[in-house]
Amino acid sequence: MKIVTRTDIGNIMANNQDGFLVQEGLYPVYAVADGMGGHRGGHVASRMALEAMAADLSGHVPNEDTLRKSFIRANKEIFARQKLEEEVSGMGTTMTVLWETPEGFYLGHVGDSRCYLMREGVLTQMSTDHSLVAELVRDGSLAPEEADNYPYRNVITRAVGTSKNIHADISWPEKRPGDRWLLCTDGLTEYIKAPRLRDILSTPDLSDAADCLLNTALDMGGRDNITLILLEVEA
Image: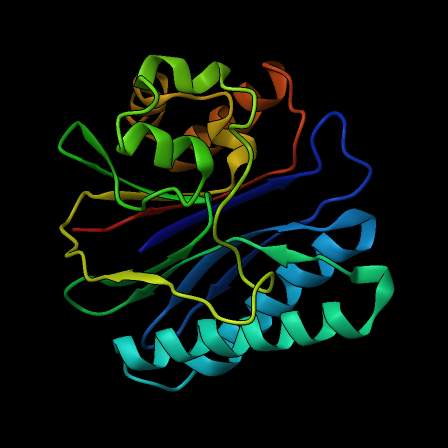
């Protein structure tokens, strides 16, 4: 697997509340998290979630139960801390995880950070946004072309650590030689929509593609932190 990572504070934010995890080994783990909850809280929440995932998955053969329990543990610990410490009250984080097997991945997801697959020129969003605007589009209350300008498009409906209980979406996509997989926070997808994303992911060199993704988001405004992991399955 070829792996490229990028993270940037962006043009506006005072600190980087995003985080990412690349844990190589027999069963590699890749994850991105986008924290929320004030100047300090967002950074704490994303770090706690990624640390829990790294610890819980290390040394295990990939399986749904272990992945789901790691989301639950991270949620429990973040929720308890934000209730106990006033300075991080209300903190939480998105988290999107790929846990690699020889045949594919376990994909775990909470929030609006995304997972994309680029296969033979076709781009597919593999995660489902847990956001107000996405729910309105799915139930037909909002047209897809109206979503980008919807005033509450950044309101997420599910996060790690903001509620006592959590439900993570988990799926089991296969991998094929030549696939490109992208994990990213919404600081990227706020600016780069599917047609442009597909074009950039077609860039032959993986590092050049990652640089183009980051620089395009920055050039178009960069109002949020931007984090991405770009993977290519080798032949």
